[in-house]
Length: 282
Image: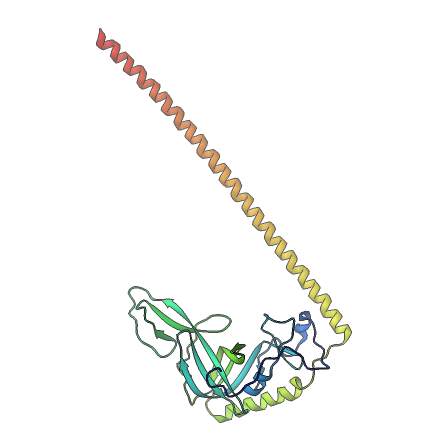
């Protein structure tokens, strides 16, 4: 079981009955797909998957598509590992959740000394390499030295799984100065749950058709851009081949000229040598 998570929820690929799941081209109209969805840890563990969407990192609350989540609570533990740091978050929802902070190895300049750090960079075994924390999607450097047990913070990231237990893969965070900040987050989270998540997402057939047309138009634009890129690539390759051919011909002509000069010089040398030999016989 994942470290510090106190639940046994299992992933579901079967959607709830009676819900309409819309195609991906409808997601631009979704109130949840392109936003940081405020959730409790217990509701993150209740997110489901739907057959046909595997590999897209899309989860569903009812029929709402979700890819980015936001949680707030107190850090109750921190575990250091070679490739990641695991934080355990307690948001008072009845279930904890792990927050995964990824690391990557970076090279140090030869002149830069290695210093052991407990924050954004941790000294590695290799004296010329250190580990730094990075965000889940943009892979930018992330300083998490302030994220220690007892700290209250708000976390944003994507949903991942370890041994069938959902985790938050950290993208960014904000420290909350006190419980008031956490309670305001609870209010916003509850309001979003009641107003949005608890109500199944619904589109009229006319809206779906309009989104399909727009999606088809975008797909056509993507195809045109792709073809334009291919044509541009082919044009560059043709121009490069033409330049190489011209360079080759220029080199051949220069070589032929040099060969002609060398031939004439050799003939001249032979004539001079023959005259010297004749002069010597006399």
